[in-house]
Length: 333
Image (tube, rainbow, N blue to C red; front, side, top):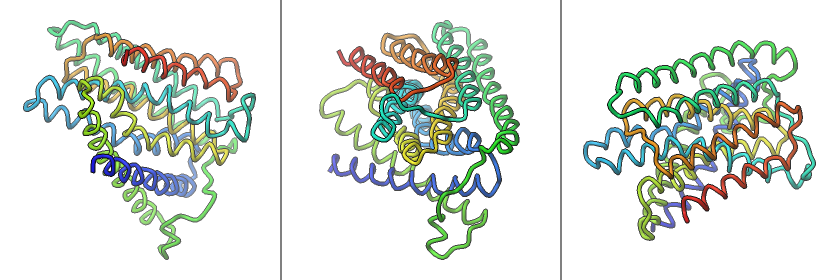
């Protein structure tokens, strides 16, 4: 039954990603906003909800489960950006390697991806440094958490301000097909778009929760620590929405939406979720934690260097997959 639960939940996540992506494309089209805002804000925050629930639920469960709940929360917070910067990028490469080849070019609108990476790297370096703050300096931890929240607020303002110029430059969101709700006879308006978005989010959350429970049951059978479970296995389930949406967009040559969905989620999960962990959980440096943040920073820095050079080729993202493989080899050894 545990294996069946995981498979059914995976199917729900895949269906929800299709529903959610379709609605967001029509929302962006109707509001006449850029693909960068649609991908980096709307899609990123919406599909980040499943993994955001884990540390929040872990915080409420801390009084009952103590260290195990905190370990799950910290692992979920750090595991999410790790998968986005490494495995998600690698899967996007696999989605187009057949059609574009290893030397093919990926062409997201560069200013949005660069902005996302700059904000993420700045915030994640701060969050990593906070691992070394002595537990007794509560005021400093709270100050760092508030700084990370402020960084995300500034990021939102910067992204929204850039939207109008990107629309003028031809990077507006264009819905390529009919909305699913419209195929059921409903009119295309903000109400039905909002309804389809809500259905997609609910299914994403339910599917991710069911998949996590199934994976946890399987993992307990083979014996894995709470921290390692949350760092390695739980994010695979909760990050599936981002990866599926971006793979779908890459296969339809919508590179800006695909990258924005991942890099926007990186900013969300590199600011607000670490702020929660720093302020409320035992945010301390451990070998598995340091391995995670090191791989994450290396992958994000690699992407930023590539964009500085002005061209992003398909084969470049092989390195992101190698970093994830190296991380797994390190923590599972």
